[in-house]
Image (cartoon, rainbow, N blue to C red):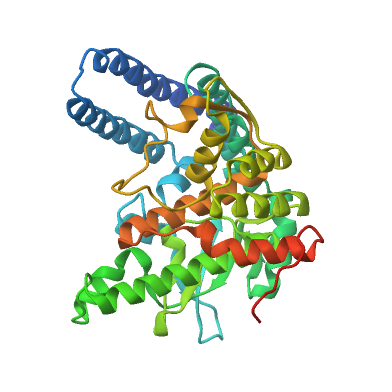
Length: 406
């Protein structure tokens, strides 16, 4: 009996020590792998500088990105926790893996299908360890390589995983049929949401082909344009009119339902923009839609985006940077923006301070741009958002003489 008790006590102590050392071991694993990826890029930058042919340079960069992507992917999968959330998105992970992380179910006594997500014990501490490591890495990178306020980006991530912050947002979303229940018999939290049947937006082309519709034909193009327009206007309504919007924009959270209706899934992350930022962004939308560099520069100041530059045509580069960050339209002949190329505005305009709350808006625009490239439709979200930006400013008494269509 004493032996059994002694064995039990030893196991309990062993578990406590293991639990205490877990964040330290996790941090060590992160920094070893992050250092390997970072030094790989620094060595590569030296090697590629000796190559003068632009096409060869691009081919080398593509290969380096693929190598780094494999290492990042392996790190995310091995560490799990917060990093597993990063790769657990349909646009980054195989569908079979994602299917194991989001589970379809049915409540007792209810005929409707639901989606269940489980928060396991201890995950909060692990995620905060991951966030702290990312914040330290971001501070180092923005001081040495990338002239952008990456630390504010990680601070916004911290807000999104902090339960005290999310609680208020979730309560506000109850009107949108979010159902949250706690199971007290087990040490975990359970989130239950209505199940919506539809086609993931990334599978739209395959679904059209199955139905005998040419994905590149006029009918398909018209359908894609309508879907993209509906999605863009939905985000414009949320961001510019109310400031309260879906803040986890990735293709896996977008379904196309019957009648080309667009459904946004998973309101676990939402954002409530203060009126000052909402109206400041409305001003920036008008500046981008009008290609007005003076107004764009003024909007930066209003939004609290602090910049530094040494280039001659500063205001024009400020407009280019704004369009790179917050508009979807690509220049003629360009299939993908290279924000860190030598000619990019981010190389000429350093962003010293970036409001944390705008990161979710930035993500939304980049989602729309990625979808527009994938669907083969080049358009400007700023132009589509112009009427809503004007209305928001008019209602706030900051714009006169504007008529709106009802």
